[in-house]
Length: 418
Image (cartoon, rainbow, N blue to C red; front, side, top):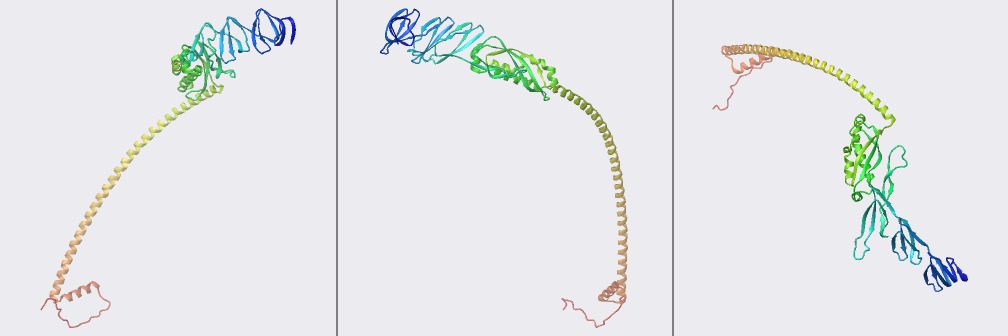
C-alpha cells in the first residue's frame, strides 16, 4: 500500500492513500474499500483512502481497422474505426482490434450474416457477396466469412502438374480470368499405350451465387470433367492416331463434359491449351518394335494369302478333275449295271424257257406213263390195290429180299351200302 499525502502518478494494481493525479488521456478503475469500482478519466486528481487503482488499456483503431468488443454478458459488438475506447474489465471480456479486409478489383468476399435477432423480423442467415474495390469492415458480430477450400497444386509433385484436395484455401475469390495447369495421367490409347496429357485451362467465374449453389470445389469438377474428355478422346484412337490428331485437343468444343460441368456452375472456359504429352521411354521403342512386327506380319500374311490362293486354285482344279472322274466312273458303273441287268434278264428268260420245256416234257412223260399204266391195268385186269402195290414197288426199286404173303381176298364193305 502506498501512503502519501500527494504521491503524483499512481501505480496500477496497488492500494493507494492520499491524492493522486490521473493524466490526461488515461482512464483508471478506482475500487474503494467497500468494493465499489468507478471509472476515473484524466486529467483529474483523486483522493484515495486505501482504494485500489488499476489502469485501463486504451484501445485505438484507425481507418483500416475495427474493434470487436466481447462483453461479459455474452454478446459482442463491432465498432468500425477510426475509434478509441478504454477496456473495462467489469463489462468487457475482450477488446480486439482487427484489420479490415481489403478487396481489390475483380475480387469478392462472401459474407454470412445472422439477422434473426432483429426485433419482430425472423430473417435468419443472409448471404451477401461484397465486390471490390472496397475496404470491408463487418457490420455485426454475428457475421462470418466463407472460407473456400479447393483443389490446389500438389507440392510433392515436381515434374507433373497434379492437384490435391484442400491445397487452395482463401476467403477472397478472384473474378478475373484464371488459368490452371493440369496433367491427365495414366491415359490409355486404343492400343494400350500409356500417356500423360498436359493441359492448361483458362476459365473465369461469372456467377458466384450459381457456383456456390452447385459445388464446393469447382477446380475438382473442372479436372474431373476434362479428364473424362481426354480419356474418351485417347481411348478411341491408337497411339499413331493420337499423334496425328493431337492438335484437336486445343479445340474447346472437344471438351463437351467440361463445358457442361462449368456451365452449370456459373463458369466459362475460354481456352484449353494442349501442352504436349509424356510417355515412358520404353514406349517408343516398344511401339517401333511393334510396327516392325506388324509390317512383317502383314508381309507374311500377304505371302500366306497368295500361297493359300494358289492352293485353293489347285484344289479347285483337282476337284473339277475328281468330279469328271467320278462322273466317268458313275457312267461306267451304270453301263456295267445295265449290262448285268440285260444278262440277268436274258438268263432268266432262258431259264424260264428251259423250265417250260422241262415242264412240257415232264407232262408228256407223265401223260405217257399214265396212259401206259392204264393200258397195263386194262390189259392185265389189275385191281386198284394191285396197281398201288406195283407203283410202290417200282418206287422202292428192286428189293434185296422179297417176302410175299398170299391170302384170300375179301371184298371191302363200303359204308352206306345195304
